[in-house]
Length: 228
Length: 357
Image (cartoon, rainbow over all chains, first blue to last red; front, side, top):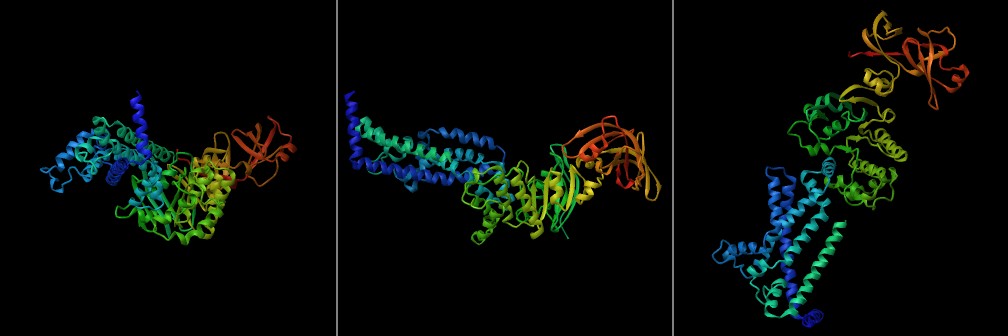
């Protein structure tokens, strides 16, 4: 028990003393997850609008597939992206394997369904009358779509934040695509997994506290946003 | 030149006819009161004109353009029409954001409209509201914002769906005043759907009585004083509607046989007809008086209703008639239920309209 308490205090010390390795890993994690969330949002929100604003056959099935993909196993995405970007894969010549770029690609794919799904739910939350009001006031179809998206902006932001939460906490893609290379692709989750196995518990705890703090901050922001 | 022309418009919704063969012509600068009971199709008609709904058949010409044709760009027409919905809603944002929306989508320089927006807010009793969060306003305030939001775009045709339903008297007065001014000063063509007869009468040049189809259209005086259908008569509150058979006696005199009595009218209609006599056009006396009134009957008071203002007396002369009299005359005549009275009205006071039976 005293070992755990000891390790905990050492972890706090690592954070308070701004240990260069802790800082470096945290910044890299933030960079990769924020980038993948950004690209995912760029793809997912227009896709969500396309699905929401158009009537087509099988819309319900599409929604079901998207919702199933919320729980897409991270290792499966890892495997898929690995096959895509490994030397013999179709995107092999981009040399993305074991690079932060490859990790961003993987996390983007992982996060897209979550952002699409929750964006659609957000858009559905806008009253049908808003559409008619916009049209009646002379808006074009495109202006009507942007008006509705503006009405749903906090819900859309919520969907993006949720995507970020999924990206930052996942370990499968980061490990399989990043390869956990020290000083290059090592992120919070992969470091924790490795260092714990090595018995370097204090670094794991320190990173765990940071990850939890990020999650807490994200949740606080999400709550603020949803209250609007 | 007609700004709006609706021809044979019919709307079938879920197998039910909600609008039946509507024909309507509206000159520029006219205010039309579209009056009818709840569920009569007022909202549907306005929505069709604003291109938010499609008619099942029929044509609509707006400023000479057939807007039901497929090659017409809905947006171009909508930008010339403004509609205020019965249950107004607001966009997220401030009151100012809401009002400038129509300008923004039209790509107009919003800054040059700033003074106009402030003036509009002021005239609607909402001065100082511009920075308020629009979603926090009361129903009456929201309704006024909705009106301002449409008016800033200066529409050629303004569609108002029950603009003052569920509003407090103060908000109602402000909106009515603004509508009257719009019509007078800016010559905006307005269609106002309302179930409020007095409002319709007060604000409209023309009124149309709608109940799936247009039963009668004309000036408020024409419609209220000479309803052309039983539905209109009942809807506008005309009392003493009687069914009978009319025979012309002289060029300007017709005898109408009711169930038990005969009455004279100056109408030219013959055959099965409805006749109505406004309660205030009937005089009551205790004794037979010599007058020019051709219709004179002896009967008994059957009921007395004190409405606070006028006294409403039910008289049985073989047929039941409702008569209105002032409190003073009522007291002077010392009437009670059962009193013997003489009832008189002129042949010209009898409004006759065709019976569709």
